[in-house]
Image (cartoon, rainbow over all chains, first blue to last red; front, side, top):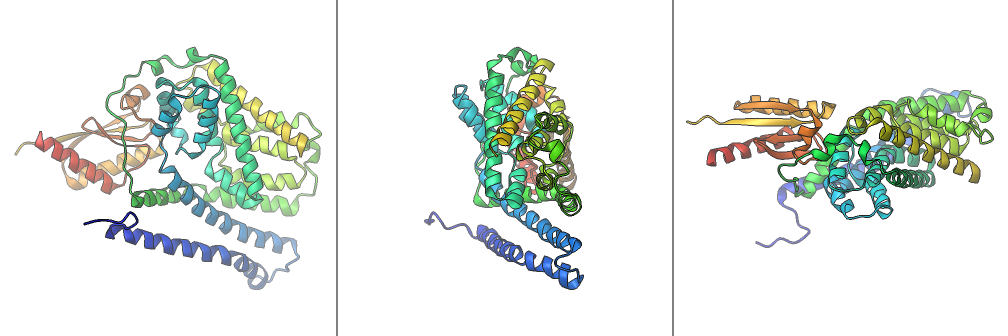
Length: 347
Length: 90
C-alpha cells in the first residue's frame, strides 16, 4: 500500500478535526469578547460609558479574556515550533561554534529551545562538559528565561508588536553582550569541580515525533502554562486598571522619569529580589509608563524582574562558585542598565 | 514462572514536575501490579550520568526512556511493557 505524503493514518485524522474546531472556536471567542465586555458593563450593569468605573470595568472584562485567549493560541503555536528543538539538539548546534558567533547563536536558540528554570543545572552541565564555551552557555542561560513566550505574548497583546519586537531585540542584546563579557573573564575555574568529572553512560534519546505527538504535547503545555499564569494575568490587569483609573497623571515622573539618572539602576536593583511571573508584571508596566515612568526605566525593571531572579541564583549555586555567580548577576545587571539608559536617551 | 522485577529511577532535583512523574509511575506500577523498585535520583552528578539535559528524567532498568517532560500514564505503561518484554526475552 502506498501512502501519499500528506495523508495521515485514520487515527490521526481525528486530532486534526479537533484542532480545526478548536481554531474556529478560538476565532469566534476572540471576536465576541469586545461586544460582550461592553454589553456587560454598559447594558447589564447600566454603567455610563464615560464613567471612570464603567471604562475601567469594560477594559478589564475585555483585556483578561483577550490576553488569556492570546496566551492559549500563541503558546500552542510556539510549543509546536519547540517540538522541533530540544536541548540536546541545541547543544549539538552550539558545539562547534566560536565565541562571538556562538553567543549570537546561543541567544537565538535560547528563544526557541524548551526551557524550564528547574532544568538550568542539567542544561548548564550538559553544555559546558560537551565543550560549549562558558560565555556561550551563559548567553543561552540569559536569553532562555528573559525572552520567554509569556512575556512576549503579553507585550504583544497589551502594547502591540513593535514593543514586543523591541523587547526581544533588547533581550538578545543583553544575552549576547553579557555572555560574551563573561566569556572574556575566563572564569572556568569557578565552575564547581564535579561538573568537569561527570561520566556519561547510555545514549541521548532520539525521539521520532508524529504530528499527533506534537499537537498533544503543545496542548499539554497550553494547559500547564495557562493554568499557572492566569491568576497573575487577572491580578496584574486589575492593578493596571486601578492605576490607570485612579492614580493622577505624572505621579511617577519625578522618581521614574528619564531625567533621574539613578532611576535605571534603582529599577534594576528593585527588580532582582522581586520574582514575578511576566504575566503579572507586564500589565502593571503599561500603567506605570502612562503615569510618567520612562520607557527605558520600565523596560530595565521588567528585564530585571524576569531575567535576574534569586530562585534562579539558588539553583545555579549548585554548579557555580560565588565569584562566577556574582559576576553573572553583575554583568547582566549592567547590560540591562545600559539598555535602559539607551532607551531613555533615544525615546 | 520466573519473577520479573523492574528498577525504575526518577531523575530530578525535587521540582514539582519530578514529583508528578513519580506519582504517575507509582500509579502505573500499582495498576499493573508488577514488582518494581522505584528510586528517586536527586543529586546532579548521579542525574547527569544518564546524559540528560533537562529534568525530569525517567529510567527503567538503566535505560533512559524520557527526559524533560512529564510522560502520560499511557506512555509510562508502554515503557514498562517494553521493559518487561526485554526482560522476558533475555
